[in-house]
Structure formats: structure tokens, C-alpha cells
Amino acid sequence: MADDDSGFSLRTVAAAVYLPTLLFGIGEGALIPLIPAAASSLGATIAIAGAIAAMLKIGELVGDIPSGILVSRIGERTAMIAAVALALVSAVAIMLAPTPFVLGIGVFVLGLATAVFALARHAFMTTYVPIRFRARSLSLLGGVFRGGHFIGPLLSAPIIHLTGGMAGVYWTMVVFCLSAAIVLLVLPDPEKVARAHRVSVRTTTSEVAVPPTGIIATIGANRRVLGTVGVGAAILSALRSARTVIIPLWAVSLGVDEASTALIIGIAGAVDFALFYVSGHIMDTYGRLWGALPPIIGLGAGLALLAFTHDVPSAVVWMCVAAGLLAVANGISSGILMTLGADLAGPRNPAPFLGAWRFVTDAGAATSPLVIAGVTGLASIAVAAGSLSGLAVVGAVVMATSLPRYISRPPRRPSLED
Image 1 (cartoon, helix red, strand yellow):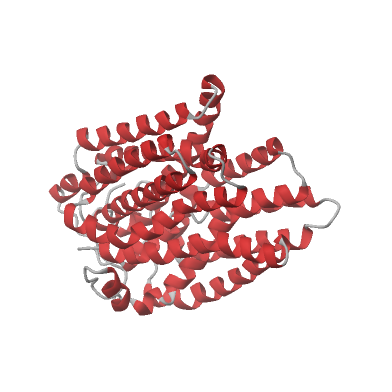
Image 2: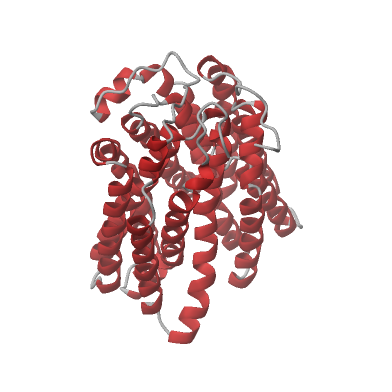
């Protein structure tokens, strides 16, 4: 992918950009699904195991605060290497945790590492990828993350079967994190390659303030955009996070066995992963609104379908249909949050704003599981799904009214030759 104006081609740095992300994602993806089981093996109740699993998102949320400053000061590649080292520390803590409390700390640290790693790569793509290819490149980045989280669990299952325990999974994460670090150290620094081509990225916005260095000052300086587009993005993030929680809970409430639940979620995950490039093409061709609004509507429709079919005779069939609809909606949203953040950030020093942006969107992702748990406890899981579908309506209105004010249409329609 090249920009005719700059002469820069993403192909020259693709391995250094995407390969570490894939390796990190596989290692993380191998471990994350087993965190509740690890907690249970240490004597944690189901509620405590769920809280420990939630520490990952909380860690990401907290990590968003300093990561923007860190990346802007030490650079993307150095920050990613530091994040990998932190992930290795967390893997050791999780592996050797004697109590659920220590396990929760290890998971929290993994969330911190994930936040730094993700923001560092996001900042590079924001600064150096030409705007007319930005959405496709970021959708690909999102797809690579999803691919890692799709491959990781597939590796975990046979490893557990062959070794008879989870120790092999911990070592799998260590191996893949070390591999990511080696790639980062051996391959050319994409920042230096991009600078050698003298890439200059234009911005599509004119109303976003140049970000200060502090997270609070950055949020204050950009309160208008974060309070409008940011709120819509946070709602989208909440809906995307909700689907990963509500489908397994829905299966339990309907009495679906574990194997069938895994099959349903696995098929939905494959559909989700298959659509990541479609999202980028839509955004680069028709505009960012078309990459944001249909997913919100689709996620809301899927949640509404669940809400109205829980007690019907064919509830399991409707759950499968809803899972498919949610997967399609989530798939076509791949990269949208990163793309919007990149569009709204200043190209010269995007990291501080991206830290604030990711803090707002991750807050939405961290909140929705708590909403589901709270509403389900007070009323029912059907009411929880219906409440989130109502939130989707709010998100659609916010996006439709605020996004066009800040982000213009793509410079031109990309051709296949690009």
C-alpha cells in the first residue's frame, strides 16, 4: 500500500508492524480463556473468578493513562519491547500464583502490558500510514490481534490434552512473547524506515486541539470531541465487549452444554475474523460513519433479538442467529475505534491523545460486563440484553450527529491497484 504523494509503502515495514502483534496476540490468546479455570483451581468462587478475569480490562483501562506519555517519550518500538517484558513478568506471576489475589495482580499487569503494546503500534500507524490507507491498515491490525486471539485457544486445547495441565499454556505465552521481542529487536525499526521516506500524514480534522502531555490536560483540551464522538465510540466498545460476555451467559441460562457453546462461539469467531478487511475497505471508500453506524445498529439488533427470544420454544436457535448477527456486526467494526482515534489525533505527536481516546473507549468496554451482571442480578439476563440494545440506539444517534462534524470523507476512493 503506497501513497503516491509520499512514496512510502507499508509493504516495506509490514513484517515489523504486524508480525510482533500476531505473536503477542497468540501468546495472550492462549492464556486469557483459561484465567477463570486457573482461579478456580486456586479455590476462587465463580464470582471471584469472574472478577479476576475482569482485571485484564481494568488493567488495560489503567494502562491507557500512562501509555500515551510513555510512547511519546521513548518511541513505539522501545515501548513495545517494554510491554513484552511486562507481559513476561505477568506470565510468571500467573504461573506461580499461590492465591487468587496474586493471580489477579498478574492478570492486571498483563492488562497494563496490553495497553502499552496496543497504543504503541496504534501511534505508529497514526503517524506514518497515509490517510487514504489508514482504515484498511488499522483494520488489518485489528484483524491480526483477533487472529492471535483465535489461534491462541486452538493451541491451548491440544497442549492441555498432551501435558495434562495448564503449565504448558503458560510456557506457550512465554515463548510467543519472547518471539515477539526477538522480531522487534531483529527486524528494522519501522519508525526509522518511515522517516527515511519522509512520510507526512495529513489530518482530516481541524477542531481537535494539539494534545498536551498529561492525560488530564489532554482530556480537558479535547473534551468536546471526547464528549461527543468519544461517547459514541465508548458505547460501541461497550456493545462489542458485551457480546463476548452475554452469549456464554445466555447459553448457561438456556442449559446449552459446554461443547455446543464452544462450537457456537467458535463459528461466530470465525465469521468475525473473516470480515476484518471488509471494515477497512468500507471506511476508506465510503467514510468513517459507514464503519461506525452499521456495527452499532447490528450489535443493538442482535441484543434485541436475544432479549425477545429467551423464553420461546426455539430459544437456542434464536441464540445461534443472534450470535451470528453479533459476529457480523463486530466483524465489520474491526479497526473502527483505532481509525477514529487516529483521525482525531494530531499526526506529529498522537500518543497522548490516543492514550486519552483509548481510556474513554476502554472504559466502555470495562463497564458493560458490570452492567450485564448488575441488571441480571436485579432483573434478568433478557432485561440486561434489552437495556444494552437501548444503549445502542443512543450510540447510533450520537455517532450520526457528531462524527461528520469532526471527520471528513476519505480524500479519494482507493483503487485496486493501490
